Image (cartoon, rainbow, N blue to C red; front, top):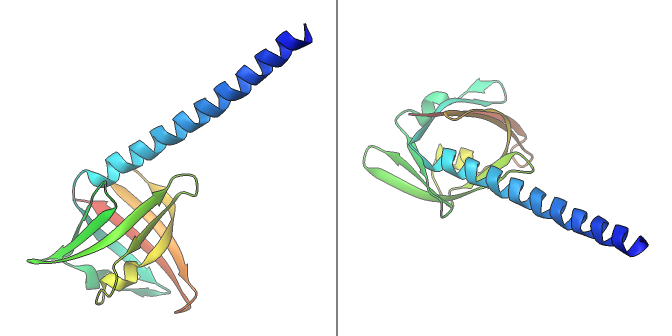
Length: 139
């Protein structure tokens, strides 16, 4: 009888682990679907107490499933990288050697609020000693 209970216990643990991984994968797929559908723009950016949103005026961002993000203003495009960490509720972006204002996005952003057409996130930049709040909106 103990063997039977042990087998049921082990099957239960394997099922829970598989279920948890399945749920995490579904969450990751949902984030990927939301981020890679449509074009985004910066609708707000506070750096410490300074509003630098206007620096991003005209920029549009396209996130791709392969981990690239393209920031375009007029006809000039800059390619960077992005990734999402569902369990940490964060998104990272990196535009290597990008000019201002794109280099201001080179952070790991903690998502504080989101929906299917917006993301609010913050970051702390210890190098520049700044606290940043970013609002992205889907166009």
